[in-house]
Length: 192
Image (cartoon, rainbow, N blue to C red; front, side, top):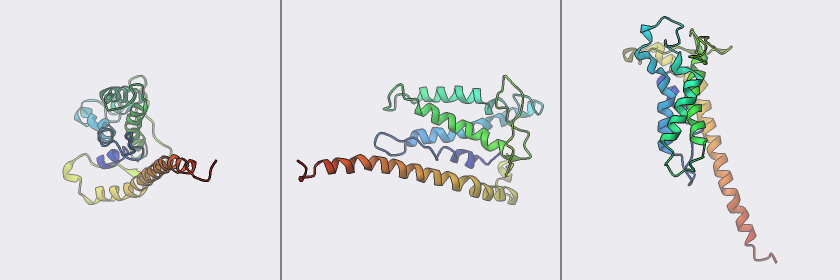
């Protein structure tokens, strides 16, 4: 499991924008909460054997649950000045939820993620795993091994996520400025 901070950060790279081009902070916060939410299974996972679809990285990490929860979250925010048929919030929320499972699939020493639970108990892992598992315990959060995990996450997850966010923002600003430049040339007094 990546640290909770890293899971929350995954809401940032493709953060949705309002009509004025600014990041929609409400959707960003909800996306961050959804990106961390699959680990709520730590509340009950000890009651089930490892590999059970209700154990850690089971049902709460699955694609069917991500689809359902993202659709419900999109319905929840439907009245935020968006077209009722705008599917972007649902796609964004799904990406946030799926990012959790994707990060857990690249964790060293993990049992895998039940991507298809409850329909299939099979666990999936990425062929390349480079994140050490973080501790659940708040007492261990600042331990040296957890700090080393955070440094690895900063290098391999945070830095690329921030770069993607910056490129996404630059592209949005460039597209927003392009029509304005074209409109100014149409008003050239030399045109007949």
